[in-house]
Structure formats: structure tokens, C-alpha cells
Length: 93
Image (cartoon, rainbow, N blue to C red; front, side, top):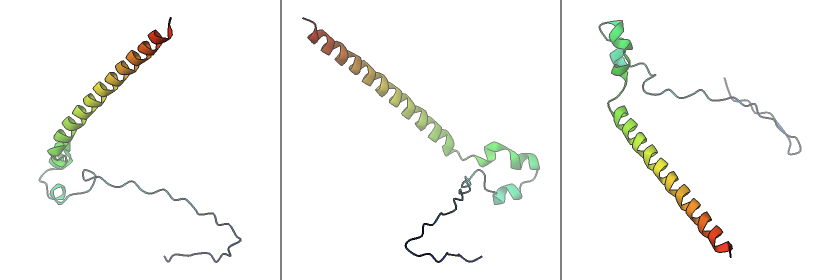
């Protein structure tokens, strides 16, 4: 199917049809040659066969990053409260 472009003049407005993209397949969703050649269907469908070992490392890294972000947020809240209390103390005669 070829691309059809309407002939329009500069004075006309063109409404384009929005077509959402299909989500990209992750490596886990793609059919692999190993799954097709597996001996039994139970082994081919087992999730641990399709999941690379680096997922565990990514999970650990993500959890450490979340913990660091949480600690940073708590520190910012503490500094903000201290600053607000200090400014409030300066205003009272």
C-alpha cells in the first residue's frame, strides 16, 4: 500500500489521523530458537529459561537507587523543616 498524500493548498487545514504505535516486544516476549527446539513444552514455557541472569543485577541496582532516593528525600525534608523553624524563630521578637 503506497503513501497517499492529499493535495492541499496553503489555506486549507489538514487533520491527520492518529494511529497509536504497537508496543515493542521485549526480549522475553520474542520467540527464540531455543524455545522452539526444546525437548518438552514445560521446559520451553518456564519463565526462568527466558529471563537473563542480569535481571537480578538490574533489580538490585534499582532497589539500591530507590533506597538512595528515599534517603535523599528524607534529608531534604529535614533540612526544609529546620530552615522553616529557623526562619520562624528569627521573626519572633
